[in-house]
Length: 216
Image (cartoon, rainbow, N blue to C red):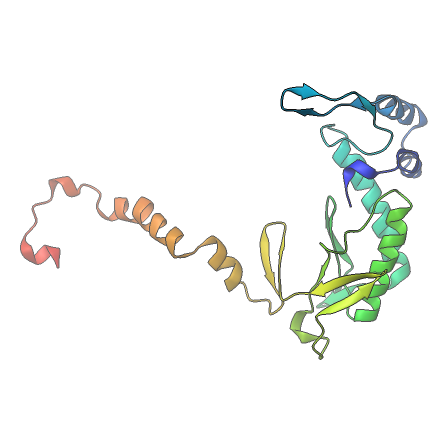
């Protein structure tokens, strides 16, 4: 999913459903009407071409409007697919940050159904799911069988043990040692020791009178 392919007519419709005043919608539509762009490379500039779709990422309004699209899509996915997973007594259906979305389910059937629904609803807005980038993680071995790939909408989605989501290394075992090791490796520990620990331990050492026994 991406900002640059959002269908603007569909976007205005979604914002209207969010009870955005018509006058404000007219202003937003006016800002996006007649947009053109060009490509610069090697000191040369291409001819200008129209931008008839998309939500320009340089626009300060783009994140908010794109989030409205994602919220609309995921509400429809969650409402019709039966996805969701319980943590204690609380049920969670999805985690979202811009176009990085996580769908939670307690069975492979429910998850595949939710992904297929996600594809259908996204295409209505001019958005397309990248199945190559999409991954499935089965926590606590809930599948019970060894599966490395599943088919969704004609594309293959890999099952992985580790996945980096928003900068965090997530492992199916729930073990955080992979994330800790990635951020606090041996080199990092040595640097922290030299920069923070040694200066504190050796504060004022220039005035010390040391004997041979002190070196041990």
